[in-house]
Length: 159
Length: 159
DNA sequence: ATTGAAAGTTTTCATGC
DNA sequence: GCATGAAAACTTTCAAT
Image (cartoon, rainbow over all chains, first blue to last red; front, side, top):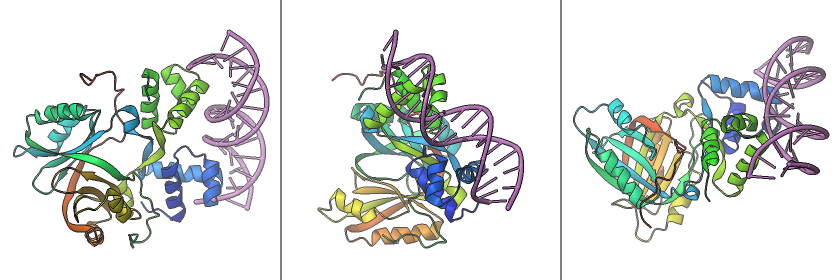
């Protein structure tokens, strides 16, 4: 689906505050509240907008430990199998299969290093996991969940 | 700050739909709309809730290529310097300093492999970057932005 | 801390441009 | 595809419990 400039700005405003009213967004982009709602409904129906969520501070609720775990899997392990082995694990923020030495990278959040260790052991105990390699996060520098820019026709933003 | 069970459920509901009305949330947790608003206001004021945002499907707007880039930096490069070098770069989803061989890991989203390559070159051209090591994401298996579970007192043993 | 109700907004939808 | 206007629903505030 193709987003025009107004769609881009609406998406950016929702990224900054997903609970903004249609009237507020409309005032910012020069549209009526109903026109804004129509566009957001269309963006949602078309799958561009997957939903609206809350941004939490994990550290504020005692989940301040973060790590990336590389998974080295048994031959012929399917992505589906990896996903199945990770779902239900509350500590898993994200996971993906990757190129390179490892087969998958799992992003973990835990309460503390003890909890992290326990989680790594739990994941490492999955039958398809041959070994794991963990990288502890020291400090988070950037955390952008939404494209910060009205992505125009090519021309990525300069540094 | 300490979250009680009701707070946990409210946060989980907001995670699933940040535009849910106070009345809807109240019905789900057995509270009035005003009580829900008070709790959400308190969670926001205390920093547990950092804000509300939209979840997009990057592939739906043509940003379907994803990679992790490990940064090997010059000696005595500060995290602040790394952050400064990455801010304003629309392709950077997240970045953090880490333990292990590399100094930092940068999560990138781009339109295609060409755009990714150009981004890697741009980041690699930063004065503090000695070399980079890229890992391309093949398929995303899990993408949980919010703690999926009412984290109860699973008590990290000891302390 | 929560409720319940009043006043002010927002959403929703039908209509017309 | 957008604006307008009216009805319904929601948010916000505050007195009371």
